[in-house]
Image (cartoon, rainbow, N blue to C red):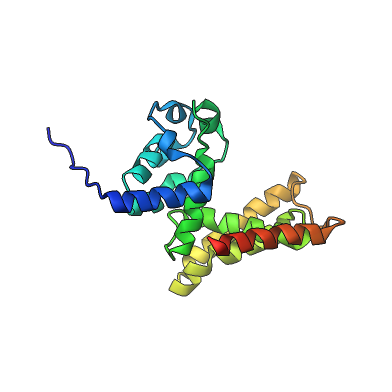
Length: 204
């Protein structure tokens, strides 16, 4: 039985490792592959990449595989991995860092709908300081159908709109869709936090 040969380039490995550690604030070198994180990860089996495997890929300098896997986008940020880890390594902070690195590199996200959801959620929250379902669904549809519009795939667009309309009606029936726009009193503080986060992201 043959096994794939692991190619290791120290320069590439160290560069990627230091970049991820600096941005995430996590000491990946403390990981000794005990796999306790893998045993508790709710999406590891679905994505095919467990937290320990992701860290291993970073240590080996496999940048392409690191930035193009489902765990980066499907991580639930439940922090079960960090709770179980003997050295307190939080994979959720690593996956968030890798999302940012993926965007900075101009790479297409491995899970476009999740990226659209995340971007729409943050945009909707930044406007009023509170999450509004109606605004969010409008922004999400714009993000989610952008590529389909570019392709001229009107069938996919119609299906998406139909599915979301059905979801919206269900939410209204269950009183989970709020039509009013609530705004926090000190919106300037919320804007300040967003601006600070954006500035920090640009500095990286």
